[in-house]
Image (cartoon, rainbow, N blue to C red; front, top):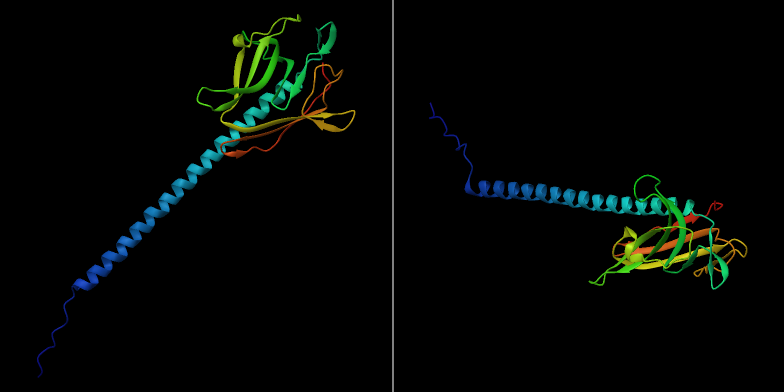
Length: 203
């Protein structure tokens, strides 16, 4: 009879423990890295969603005011001119604000740039009540609506429906409105899609 053989120990050697710890550490690091990537991706997606929302809100505001444009004239130097003018930086026209509340009724609306003390350039809309008279417009008393912050570029273009030419200056002495407006804008995060508006028949 031979004595029974002694089986090897069922425990782990030091080398095996070190290898297991290394593999576990790598797996944990990979999991945390994956969660970090997912978190950054969700953050970027939320920033993009917020940016698109701002663009859409600005487009909707401008569209509602341009669609409500009124074909009014005023007297300048004894000559009747349309209550509309525009250049590459902005435009001015008459349109209604929401009819309800203290800010309702017809207003002279000016969309222009505003430079802040810190040098940042914002895009704002200003509105003053329209009373039909040619008065000095005190824009310090205007209702202000922010449209975009931190602008890098802004270009307004006006389509002359009679000549089919795009221009960047539309004086109030022209006896008709542009047929379309295109606005090209970029902020610190990049260029926006061009904002396009068709002028309906002014009421």
